[in-house]
Image 1 (cartoon, one colour):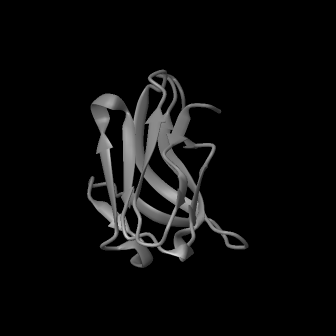
Image 2 (tube, rainbow, N blue to C red):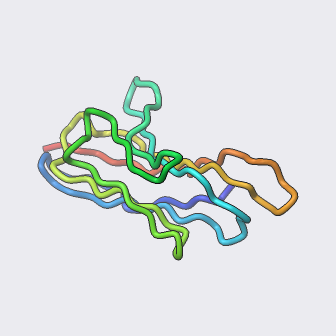
Length: 121
């Protein structure tokens, strides 16, 4: 769809850090919940971190204490700061957003194209 654009993936050694960004198009009328998901090799897509309906952040147990999700509503951008990366964090990371694309539209789910994160020595 091109309405969510991710950046910031790459290759790092274990213990390293990366920051992912997801910028939503300003054409979108309203953006609701946003989250990061990932899909590792041979695995199903899983929720990594996201904002609940009340606006607080929620994390998968495997990333608690290492990853931090944040959101800049003025810039339509969500971030995922990933510290102390481990080989098991290797995956394609996807941005998710619940949106109302236009003033007369119904709520929809948008996904970004994905960005590869590889953690290896």
